[in-house]
Image (cartoon, rainbow, N blue to C red; front, side):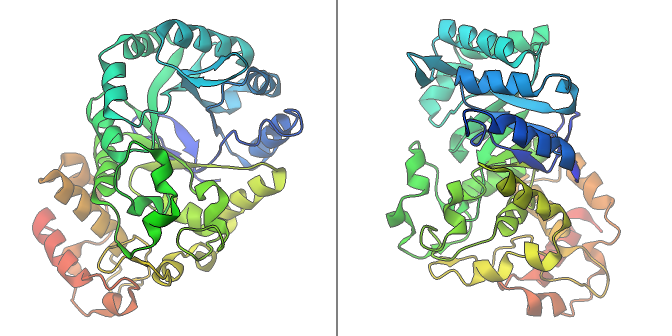
Length: 382
């Protein structure tokens, strides 16, 4: 298992994590089965958005004797009311829900306390200007949570939250179809069939800005909906009208800036093992570029997807990394010192480009790579 820095939190997390969708299966007996597989394969990170007390209790039971082996991302403001899930901003309910969570999980702390499901600016303003954020800050101060997170599907809201300085970890929906869609306060817009009927061109710029801003500010991204709820794995359901493999979806998410871990939705042990097999997959199995280029109504022409199809460079330049750092600097309008340092650590730099064009001949998306190398040389002076 490969491990990545979760932004600036100091936590090292497995790049394959677990969503909690499958925990409730088989009367919650799946929880222990899935966490057993996670421990066996080195997965140390999981998300617990559900407020179902039976699921929370099953997690607490399954963690007995091995709490320190897992980094828990669990959701504040996700409460259980009248026998069902509720997203709440009522501070009394929020506090009661958190205390119940801690009790059922049989733990003294949560590693990442997620402010749950914030998709509108009005909601974010209610949180940041009201008692919810104050309570979350108090939880961190007391050590009840170690880091503050926020979950969202709306890049506009997520960007405001990240820029506030309060958020250390962002849980966000990342996949090659949702990344085409503009910001919306209605999460259902992400998978509505009519939103994919017309030809879509390139990633939504606000989403790209979000990922790059997270990278620059050291906010780690934990990915939800990498498979689009399973739709992207089925041609008859996929908005792209073509099926992708789980490995291609995972690789796409893991090559976005700031992404630390993908919370793979798994309802069975077999599904979790399929996601874990990404770790030993070949480059060909992970490759998503040619599949993307074949989507009938989606066009990434001219947009670098960081797929590395341009390799190998005769001067050994890591073109995808150079382009990623170039885009980070462009998004800021200047070169942040951290970006300059990371660029400087590359073994070879854009200034070594001999403009042979071999990379451009291999790019499925017709990116002007030579021009990008010229821009990077000018931007970084190397």
